[in-house]
Image: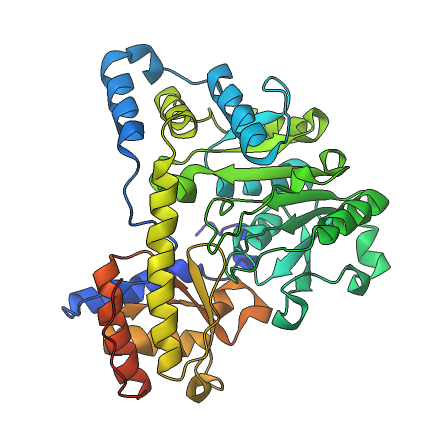
Length: 402
C-alpha cells in the first residue's frame, strides 16, 4: 500500500474529528446532544447577504465562471473601505488585499509560500491548530511560545533562543485569541512585537477573525494600526465569525504588496479563488446594514453572562471572556489529574454535552476545555442542569433570564 507523506504522519489526530465522532456516537444512542465544541456559528447569515447571493447566482450566470483568484476589484475595494472605516488603516485595493478561501486555508498556504524544510515558525500555545499544523505540512519546525494567565496570555520574546531566531521565518499572533479569548489592552505589546520582528527579519502573521466580537465596550484593534507594522506583518480576516458565513469560505489577507506576493503566487498555482457570486455577497456583508453585528454580539454576550455566572455558582471558577465566542475554562478540580480529553469524552457519554479538550490546542493547553457559545439561548439552561449533575455541584437555582 502506498503510504502518506511523512509530513502528514507528523500531524496529531485532528481533535475536532475525534470530538465529532464522540458526538455522533451520542446521537446514535439517542442522547440529546448540546454541541459547545467547534466554533461553528448557529446564528444565521444576514438576510441581505443571502439575498444578494441568490440573486447573483440566479440572474448573473457569468459569475459561475472561474473567478479572479486575487479577488475582484469590487471585493478588494470593499475590504479596504472596511479597514479604513473600522481601524483607520489605509490600504491600496490593487496592491494590499488578497481574497482567500477562508483565513484558515490562507494561513496554511502562507506557510507553504514562505517556509522551506527546517525553517522555524514561532507559534503561541495554546493556539488555533492550523498555526502549527500549517507549519508541519510545509516541512517547517515549530518553536512554541507558551501563553500563561499570569502573563495575560502574551508571549515572552526574551525566552526564544538565538539559535531559533536565526532560522525563523514566521511568527503567528491572534488577539482576540482562540481558544483563550485573551485580548491585548496595552498597545506597547504591539510596538514591542514590531520592533522584535524587524530586528530578526520575521514575518508576523496576525490572525484577526474575532475583531468584531467584543463585550463590555471592548473593541479589538488591527495589528496594522501599529506604526511600522506594515513592513513586518500580514493580517488575516474572515467572514466566518463576523457575518456567520463559516460555510461560505471567504476571507482576506492584507498588507504590504511585497509581503503578499509569495502568498498570491502560491495560490495562483493551487486554487482558483473564491467564486464570484460569493465575493459579491461578501461585498454586501461589508457594505450593507451592520445592525447584524450588534445583534450577534448581544446574543453572545447574553449567553456568556448567563452561562459563566451559573458555572461559577456551582463552584467551577470560569473567567468571564471579554471577546470571542468562547469560554476558556480550567478543568474542575476533580478532573485536573485525569486530563481534558478524558473530561470531554466522559462529558459527552454521560450528558451529551460536547466541549473541546484543551490538549487539542497544543501542549500548554492541557488542563483546560473550550466551550463555544454557539447554540440557542434556551439550550444553556439545559447545559447548566447537566453540568451541575455531572459535577455534583451545588443545588442553587439555575433560573434566570437570557
